Image (cartoon, rainbow, N blue to C red):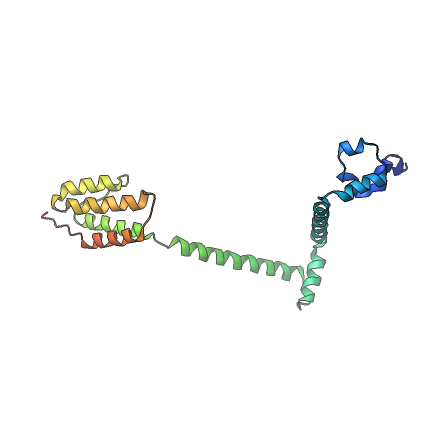
Amino acid sequence: MDPTTVIAPLRMRLGGDYNLLGADELQQNLNPSELQAQINARSNRWLWKAEAAWDAVQMRYNAFLNDYDFEFQKSLLEKMGIPEVTRLLLFSLVGLGIAVFVIILSLTLRRRAHRVDPLLKVWRDFCKKLERAGVEREANEGPLDFAERASKRYPLAAQSISEVAQAFAELRYGPVFEKEKLKALRQSVRRLSIKASS
């Protein structure tokens, strides 16, 4: 079967530009040269050319991926100065690359995991101080409830305990974190003195 009998002659004459025509332009019964003039006069012709260029880039990339087999890899490594490439060497290089990546990733994640939030460190110091004085924080107890319970046990230090808990709650759950307030909280915890006789 002759493909030209199935394809519209106008499509054959205009080539890819046929795709730029709208239905209203096709219904005007213009001849091919008039339609081509309309297409050329459009301001978005540059956009169509950019799309065509991008499509060409994608086609080259797809062709590269299709050709990326063992022989291509072997020739690439030979160009880099690594002769006598075997599948075993290639798999070893890939395995080595993956191992290096995993090691770097694990070191990065481990470093992040060991970072301690400075605010939580101050709070834990405060809790340890109270624990040494005999008031242990319950796992489900919030900072204000813990401070209230500790204040009942040590009424002479109640104001200091309450201020520390309030400052912690503001910094931890408030809308703004201020470093100056963290420094003040750290100093308050250091100065806090809880005596068993209180």
